[in-house]
Length: 179
Length: 172
Image 1: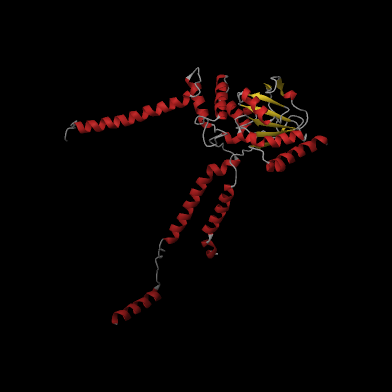
Image 2: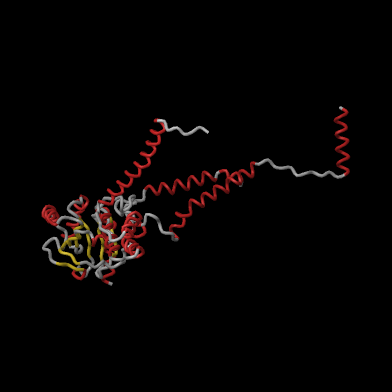
């Protein structure tokens, strides 16, 4: 027993080492969203496309993606082909939130790169962003037909994230809707 | 006692000390002012300004992570400072503003973690480790201390044996 006691520091060291080693692989940037399963906040904003006024009631009444983007945001450009492909395949409607951007630059960006959005609302002062708990573009929400946030992806959507996170989240919400 | 003579050298030292203290204060307040000037908010009272400062210092910038709202030039930090300002001017209490932040950004937004079950280890872990360390050290010290012999009382018979033994030693 007293022999075993001698090894206590080794055990403590091993336990700490495992704990800290795992800690190295946690991503401090992906904060858990407190808005999951909460309804989208109210808003009244103009669209980038034709400046028509949009409120929460105008959002699709089926599951859709809400993608926070900006023309200044390189990862947004990076994930654009994936969103474009999803739009072409008719996976689900995609609504954009043009976050803290300049309208003319946003329009230019859409002309240059193509728009995956059914429409995009202009959140110039970032107030909708704050109400969505956004801290930087890109961020993407899966919203169900009742306007409730069901999943949030922070940062760029690459193929891996699309296949392994977003699509399953969409499938889960859609499966629920058909029940 | 020797009277204090103000030689040019002592005078120099006193002036230097004065400058260092005052100078530090002046530059300190200057930088503070520069920091606050970024937003240029107008307050109606010092109390409102104090609350704004306090809260900008206590909330974490969600984007830059290891900076508070005051120290961050990030877009979202700027927006959050504006929201705090508007809420203060709107007569919202500190608690209401905290709830506003909490509902949107979660516990992460507090630079100073709130005391709750999940943060007990964070708050009291160091103290627990300190106590554990103290306890271990106390144990080691107690064990290392030389054992104090109890006073041995000999009965008559033992006393007699001791005497004969000692006598034997003396004779040799």
